[in-house]
Length: 451
Image: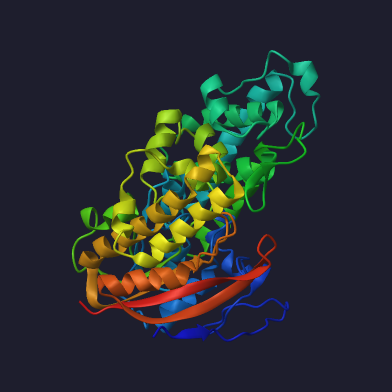
């Protein structure tokens, strides 16, 4: 029988629940960064990322020591990797999304000279400001875009089709493209990637019209926004963090651009002592949309074929990433509990008369998701040391016609069939689903591989 555990609660002075070696967060506070966690993590971060102190808690709980290796097979923007490095633990991350892989790689690169980074950033800023001034644009004063029609740079038609309409207004986009191209002349500089990551964050959180809720969307357009000053501000955050650790010894951190279902192809056998990760949940969130704007502007996704290739390397968790040739659902056939849920979703669809193409895929994507996770858990065994401990942060879902999917419980059952020991399931937080009037659990499934 699976053991369920409620992690203990503690309030900080700021009245926010927070992990301090043995703590759990709840509801909306669950994914917020505590002030002490912003170092390195805040360079660029998914809105849906899990909190850094959750990683610290499990590294302590697992008793990880210097010289051991923690793996995050769905590393996103590097929360586990950064926290491992801060705690003196070696780490390996695997990520299929190129912009997230890039962000993780930069966030664990602490060997850049902060003075040189500042110098190059200021030179790039001055050159960009000079170009804009010659065009009659003052980055620090709001300009009237209508007076600049015909002069502003734009994305190609194909690039425009890849991003959300009105993701970024014409004048801020023009300034971003000028800055990007000036920056591209400095690719030989050791700090180039750090400058690019600062631009990625600036694009999304300072300049664009995007907002993030349950899904990424567009809010009231900004006719203009300071781009160069905002970018320099993000660079200075990076400089401040690196200045504290520059020229010191650190554990190793490796980030691999790969599919989490094929871990054994990129990581040697018997390498990993622990896994701490948060895979995608089975829902209708297209995770590639969250990073689409910066991916396109910085050239990580150039066309529809790039996007299609990216989606094919991800565990199928939403209907917008399903393809005819997908076969991960074959891995779910031996799990009757998965097939029961898929049938319940399909029966509900028929009962409600839902006939859209996406709705017809709800049952299939459920099988694909759990089949993909089964494939991942089977494959990753080869890389694990006997006795390796694993923590998977997952959440219940009811996105598919209100059929409840207990993700953590199902993942634990699959892991048991594959040969893992399910140690327990920790409750991370709960959230109320207005559509189903149910409390959905976000849990941490704790596994052990005995070899």
